[in-house]
Length: 124
Image (tube, rainbow, N blue to C red):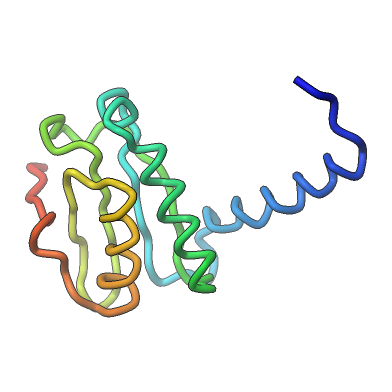
């Protein structure tokens, strides 16, 4: 692996700190939780997490917090994403890939519509 210059490290720190701000709850009204238990990670949850953060950045949305959780208890539905909004309440989505993750941002978070095709009921 090539060594990074001081300027490259500062640039990397700046870009990553902006991504990490998406995890701060202050001033946020929408909360997205990506389930990152071992089965979720194996099913692609890290790709889903990155796709959500990238889409939020692309749309300029800074009122959304994105966090991770452990196992949701429904391995057959992984990767699982939960979205909590003031208007739609809590909705869980299963079998989420990068394309569905972008749809969650566009249709659910921005458009205020539930994606019925991927909605699941999590047993609590």
